[in-house]
Length: 459
Image (cartoon, rainbow, N blue to C red):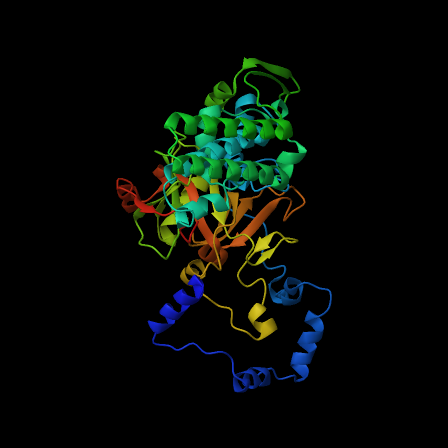
């Protein structure tokens, strides 16, 4: 008997419920529940046509009732485009800093080189993967931690700490210094080859550990793998500059030039002195866990010596109050959410009442936020910059606005408006200066983080 069958029989033996297959009676009962009355036939005719489910479920009564005007809005300018890549966390982290760069150098527009930072992000993630493989080299191949590392050695994803880790180590450069390439705009092919080389290298390192090879030999093999990764990245993205000259035109039409700059010097000049994890805190709304506690995800970072993904879990009212205070002070925020839920991309609006799925199918899909998280029905999928809030006469928020990184043609001129109800259900985390937090939240920052596994359901 196969292991899976033995395990299944043991689980069933310990269960109070007996498993059984569908009987003919069950099947007839299920089939009989589908009543093909006139209304059902009409809905079936609609749904079997060419239109999408969203188009058919669109709540017509809601259209035109949500505008794109805001009482408080951060001064931002220009929309970026991450194209076919998973670098939203990188674009969002940089979009928060862009207005300050434009003000500092007197620019009408500006963007960072995401290609430059992407190169070092994937390279450092490759090194971290190999270090994790060495650290778990004596664990069996079917250990869940080992499986997790090999399942995805590297990917485009990340959070704000990913930006901080790489920018602090390698600096940043303007877009013109290292422009995008076909493979930074569309990353799937490039990362597939990097993953393949890393899996091969990781497996060979495990074999070396099993054979009792010396640490010096194992480390030499790691460097050999990283040389190949560097070559793949350099061929597809170009080699990152060590020093550069940046010529630009300011808002008055004057040609300016920064000579013999380094990426680190540029980073230091454009980054606020307090821009670090000691001051900028990830706050999160996770109703599956206790509030006012700090959580840290094991090995969720992109550089071996970098900081892990760490967050303070807070109730919604605390998060909203802090976000409003930040916007009023003209400071945008890194935010991540489940952007695919109830998104009307044509109008640039997110609202839980945007689509009437229950009414269309005659099926109750409702789940609260906690249940959606635990069942993997919902989770953070995209990072954007939170820049605006509208409030009622009592100062209560009614709607908010994202600056997105899907180009100016997506949404409302590149921006997305979302209602306060959508905030409640699908906003997960925000990076915010601790000065905007309430007293109870600030007091919670001194705790020792609760460590969560790399495969945690929320991440």
